Length: 237
Image 1 (cartoon, rainbow, N blue to C red):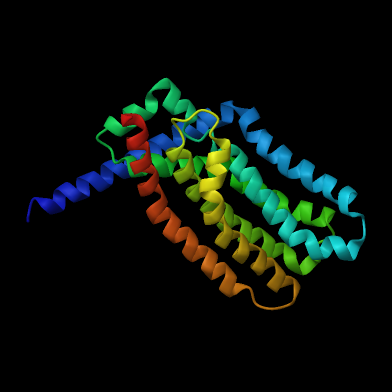
Image 2 (cartoon, one colour; image 1 turned 30 degrees about the vertical axis):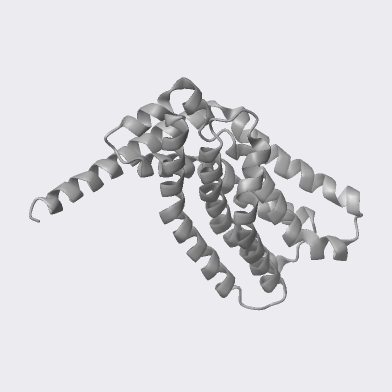
């Protein structure tokens, strides 16, 4: 029993150090691929900019639809970038090396997902107030929109990592990835739009944000484990 404590502490320290190092490396690599970062953002902005043309410029109609439109577009933009989360690492063999590393694969997956959120989900959330203005979103909904997207897009990245890991060995896996993760995205979408709508109605949206935070905590604990298991299966096959 005495030897178990130091061993566990050493594993945790090694995993945390590996997480920090891999996060730094992945962030540098992501910043070099600016096109991969820009594509989801351009999709998000372009579709939302075109939406008033499609449904009409009536301010009241746009204001009523704005929460759902922004959240659905954020979900689709996040999904657009999920397929490549592990793809390049799988193709060049570095993903297999991660599975053979003495560091826990959980931290490696968490590092890659964290970088994915930093370069995709965080910019989407920060852009959302500007796009809300384009859709005539009333002023009372901006804070709820921003906070819900900060929490929600992080959950989307974590959940999507499971689907990306399950399909990483398949060619043209985009449709299958969407079929796997879309049902899991629904609770995040429901409570995210619910938070914005509650803010617009003048009610407290703390309950919706609390549920989003709970979903994020559960996803942070479970999704990297599930994705790590899927990666091991994919690399062994």
